[in-house]
Image (tube, rainbow, N blue to C red; front, top):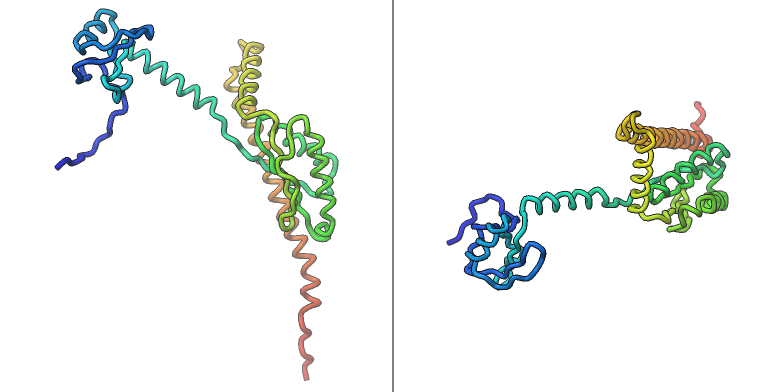
Length: 255
């Protein structure tokens, strides 16, 4: 009875003397078809060209083998996989919170963050937070969302129309540029800065500094929103306290 005793199963192709078949369909170093030849002849040709005999299609009958520099092939494959991972796009949904009666300065600041997110190829979820009597005026939030969408229409579009969600109104903006395009443009801009600033601070340090600056801005936004949420909860609790006092039964008078 066969029993598996552990250990990893190799996914690498068999090469040279590890190939155990009587004959192979041979492909030359430049991709030319040599034809079906005995394994010994294929190994002899590999030695003659100072290359490796690599089994590239083990399931074929007979197996397909190619003459190549296997070490170089592995290196180039690893570089291609690394480049593919580097260019892989991860869609991120950023979030920005606004008030229906936001002042112009705060609006411009938050619009600037939305612009930056869209330029990076990220989606942006815009949340309008209503408090107190503002909940009876949803048109204020709707008009603000339409205004913001109009201000950034060159960079993004309305992916999800404004809709009410409890005390909030939500809209999602999608970028016109794909994430991969935005990443490619960012790398080109980084290369241009490197060419302009050779001999100065390294581009890696500049990129790290920029990332730290953006992260600090995002942290400031989150901290401000947390503070606003706490302020809203305190305001709502203060508004609800008189109503609760009026609704409570009076204590009976003492005899």
